[in-house]
Length: 231
Ligand code: URA
Image 1 (cartoon, rainbow, N blue to C red):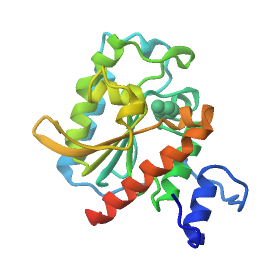
Image 2 (cartoon, rainbow, N blue to C red):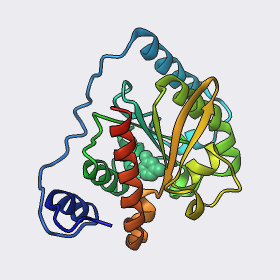
Image 3 (tube, rainbow, N blue to C red):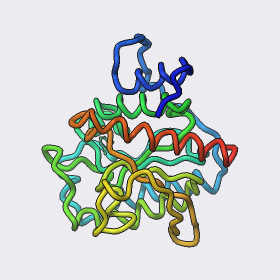
């Protein structure tokens, strides 16, 4: 799988699987929100989407949540990642993937020379489900138009779905992740068509570290696609 004589790739891989070969103690400053210059239209559309979610009346998740968790990263990016729903840390900070799963996501990104400034990140659900339970089918159905619109506004060339909730919501409820991960499919969202790949959710990888081997294959596919598309 890995070429034996490529030390850089090996270090990235070992770093990703948490093998203590090298340490990087640099703290990630997530409090300093980057300001990205986006076109007026895009900024306006994102703001109006966020407001429509905030104005949604019929959602009990809002009763317990502190903050809306809308997105992080660069709205101009051509690579978009979508997870499931915010957890406690995300709810606290109002940003997706800032807890332990987020730390692993950062490592996954860095293993393929990406980081939060180069990608755009959101979730299927924008408010934390109590006790970190999985969102119900009804909740997913309620938020689906918003994440679909979100994709249409960002217009990524590569869309990465993290885990089965994102996959089942956006590709089809009958699909199983073990069969679907690591494959490129073309998918339309409204009038906009993009390349989609499913990979394991970082929280799943923390529970099943042996699956990081497969996740690494998916990450390399994302890296290669990004290079082919000259993103
Ligand atoms: N898990 C998710 O799916 N999304 C987050 O933002 C955090 C954890």
